[in-house]
Structure formats: structure tokens, C-alpha cells
Length: 204
Length: 178
Image (cartoon, rainbow over all chains, first blue to last red; front, side):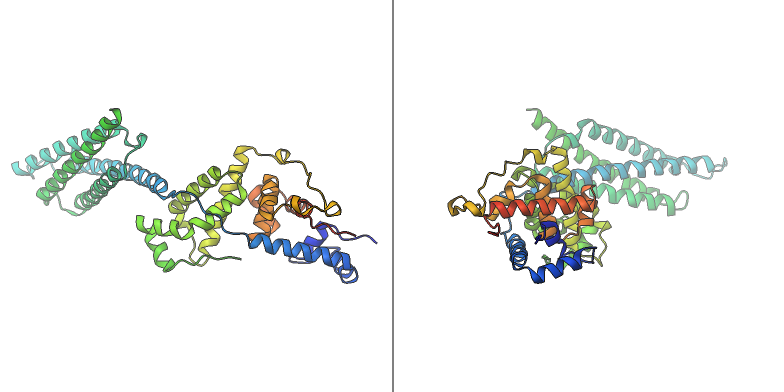
């Protein structure tokens, strides 16, 4: 009498019927040795499921959290760069479409010049942050927290600036835009401090 | 199939989708053990399992927006874990040829002092066989699902499982006397 192979015993518990399974079931009913083998297999599988849950020896969350923070920072910087490009394009468009007649008064031109200056300072500060290569360095959790907070606030300002550029009629809202750009420059200054200080410490 | 309930799961997932770091940590704390356990059962070393744990949660936090609420959260995380662990096996190029020779005496020469316990026997299986045993017998994946994750056929998965059980049976001294 040929006993059931391990493949055939395992097949008995698989969903669906395959050729040979009915025959194997009939054999199992008639053969005490195969029934015992089948029972041992099922017990072994039950013991496998009952093995204790293994737990990690150390907490890996800080490492995951740090990688997530770096990823988030990279995305924010990318988004800010896109927003600045969009704002610059809109400004150019607004300037090119402006009537040749003296529609804007002296205050208007002064405000525009001030905004252009603040935008230039923003770009310079962002270049300084890029040169510090914050993504390439290991930083402590507190630094990440401060940098992430600053970047989130900058992203908020970018959204507000975008709304201002799109919604405010020409010549209106200049003071508010100047204020937003000033805040942006201030926050970027703080972010440069965080990254440059950290870079120096790493250098030491 | 084991499940790992997370209190306020819907709320935690919603907050994680909006990028809330506290929600990410809540997910980690809830599923850290089952993820590590699955990774450790498949990978050869604790270091590899810890790397898989880390990579899994990085992926979970990045891709939480892709999780469909009608599915099982643990089922989704488990599939990511299994894929990462199997990827790690492929990367490390472990081969079943590394397996130790089958030198444990059979039940016919039974010596209880030489019998292995199930943990040791499982650890002794080759990488692929152990992964198939765990994914099929413990996690409840079908041969088709395992084949999909491993990039092999269902027949391959079935033969690995049968081969592994023959070995386990011998190492555990469970062979029939007939």
C-alpha cells in the first residue's frame, strides 16, 4: 500500500479540489498510518502558529522619525521653490501687462522694488541653506524639530503669498505682501542659523 | 489569522494621512512587534529584521495615503513587511545551499536528548523554505500569493513547503515508525 506523500497531505487542506485530492481523502479514511501522519502535520502547524512573538531588542522609531523628517523637509523645500517660481512668473506677467500710462503711483513702484529686493534676499538665503546640505548631515532631534517648524511656517507663508498674488487686484495689498515677504526673509534667516550652526558643530 | 487591533484606527490613519508625526508613531507602536516578528521569522539575523522593521514603517508612513480603508490595516502592513523581508533575502543572496546537512537522527534511532525544538528546527531550514513555511502555515497566505511575492510559481511554493515539512518532521523526531 502506497502511503500519502507530504505534498498530498498538505494538499488536503488547500482550498479547492485538485485532481487526486478525492482519492487522497479516500486513502486517508482507510489508512491509519496516513491519518496519524496527517494529524502530526496539523499539530506541527498549530505549534508553529503558537510560537512566541519575537520583539526587537531596541527602539527603531527615532531612526524612522528622523528619515521621515528629512523626507518632509526635502518636500517642503521643493514646494517652496515651485511656489517662488510661480510668484516670480506672475510678477513678470503683471509687469508686462501693466499699461504704459502712469497707472501706478510712486508708492506703488517703491513697493514693487521693495518686494523685488525681499525676493532676492529670499533666494540668497535659500542658496545658503542649499550649500549647507542639511540632508547630508546627521542632526539631533531638537535641531530637526526647530528646522521642521521653520520650514512649515515658510510653507504657510508661501501659500499666503500665492493667494495674495492671485487674488489681490493690481496695486492693492502691496503692504501686506511686503509684510509677508519680510516674515519669509526672517524665517529663512533663522533657518540658515540652524543649519549653519549645525554644520559648524559637525565640522568641529 | 491573527489581527492587531489599533484603538481609534480610523482616526489614527486619517491623522497619519495629513502628516501628523504623532499618528505615525502610534502606528509604529501598535504594529512594531508583529512586523518585527514576521521580519525575524523570514530573515536570518536580528540586524536584517531590524532593517526590515525600519524600512517597512518608512514605507507605511510614506504610503499611508494609498491604504484603502475597507481593507485590513494589519493585512496591508503585513504585505509590505513580507515584501521587504523577501527583498532583503534576495539582496543578501542567501541560498538554500547554505543549509546545514540533515544529520539529526530519525525516530527509528530516537534519542530524545538530540531532538530539536521547533524554534531551532525552523531556524535550521533554508531561507526560502522557512519563508514559505511561515507565510503559508502561520500568516495564512496562499501559494499563489506567496509565489507572487517571491516572483516564483505556486508549484515552487508547494514543493518548498512539502520539503520543509519533511525536514521538520525528521529534525523533530516525528517520523512514523511504519
